[in-house]
Length: 155
Length: 164
Image 1: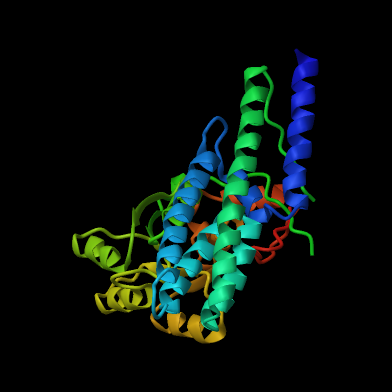
Image 2: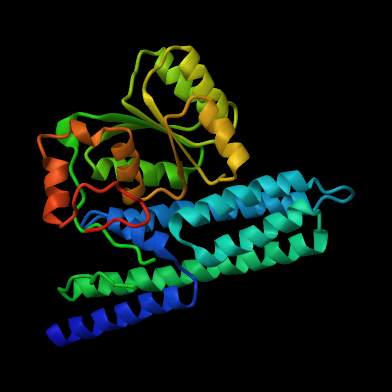
């Protein structure tokens, strides 16, 4: 049993580190984990709220960009600003980075740039969601095997 | 510059501090509420500046208000001005992603006591509490003891470079 736990913990550690190394997560995600009490699902709950934000805001952006006639870039920009804020708050580094670029395209009213960013942001948040789900599953497996989820030192 | 991580989270429950979180985003509401909870600070959450004003009109009062800037209905600048006009003397810390000097100045001039860039972390909130002298209200030496134990002399708390 100990060998299984140790293997799972190694897997978890390697997987988590890879998410930081790929630039998918940043230090703010580490900060969220520090806020979590033992045994609580705080991080998962906050990420769930974040993904709900993504669905809502990306929907707003898509609708605003879908206007036949004049696109109101300030409406798109307002949703991008919100998504940038919440992605920054959860450590979703790539999503945040895309939002920075997206906002610049909104400010310069670059339609093609906005549409490209919208597609990329949609892909990126879904990728993050899948990867975090895998990470949370590994945590569950460790706990079910009788082990403790290790604190991963990123630095 | 490497960021040093705080291993122990101080418990300020004995200080009986209360706080109000004012933010329209559920992610930030959740995070700010959690950080305050973890520090033992009882707190309420509202979603915009109007609700922040209304809650004070209903007679509630708080030691600390964490005020977002961009909110619908009534934004953080307007709410801060209104609360000060009402004579509310709570410490108000502006917490926002907007960090350019012009916007920061406008927010500060509305009546803030302190300003911190989002995203908020435990360290950043401790820095706010320290700058606003709230940590002095904890039980005798509690906060200082933890810092002394962690080999930290009387240095100013820097949210990005906490020494332990």
